Image 1 (cartoon, one colour):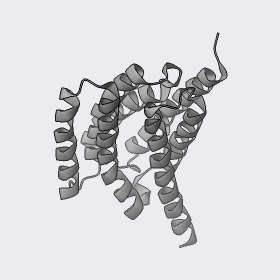
Image 2 (cartoon, rainbow, N blue to C red):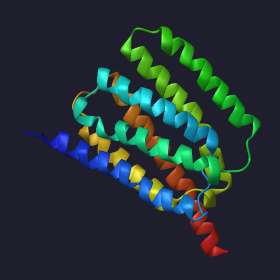
Image 3 (cartoon, rainbow, N blue to C red):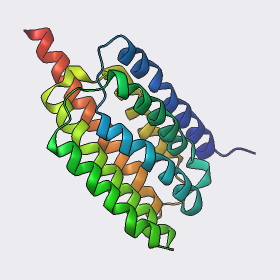
Image 4 (cartoon, rainbow, N blue to C red):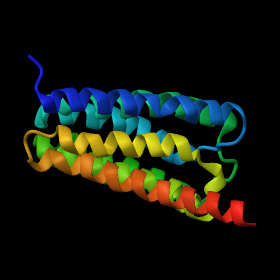
Length: 193
C-alpha cells in the first residue's frame, strides 16, 4: 500500500524526469546551451547520490535522485555537441575539485559522510551553471527549470524521515529555485526591452 509521501515522491520523480523533455528539446533547437562541466559532474554525482541516497535515505523519496541521474546523463551526452562553447578556468577548477572530492568519498565507509561529500561535489558542479544562468539567463530553459523546481518542492513533502539525507532534496530545491529566478529575471528583462 502506498503512503501519501510515497505517492508524492513518485509524482516528484516523474516531474524530475519530465523536466528533461523541454530541456532536451530546447538543446536540440539551439536555445539552451548546457554547461559541459556542470552536466559532466552532475551525471557522475547523480549516480553516486542516487545509490548513497538509497543506502541512507528514505526509499519512498528515491524517484527524484534517480531522475537526476538519468536526465543529466542524457544532457551531458548532448552537451558534447550542443553545449556552452566557453570552457572557463572556473569549469576546470570545478571539475578538478569534484575529482579530488571523490578521494575521501572512495575511502569513506560511512554512508552519511559519503552522501555529504556527494552533495558537496554536486554543488561544485552547480557553480558554473548558476553563474552562467545569472549572466546569460537565455542559455537555460525556464520551463525545464520550473518543472525541476516543482519536482524538488514536491520531493520535500515526500520525505518521511527528516535525517541527514534530507539535505540533498533541500539543496536541489534551492538550486532549481535560484535558476528559475535568474531565468525568469532574464525573460522579464528581454520582454521589457
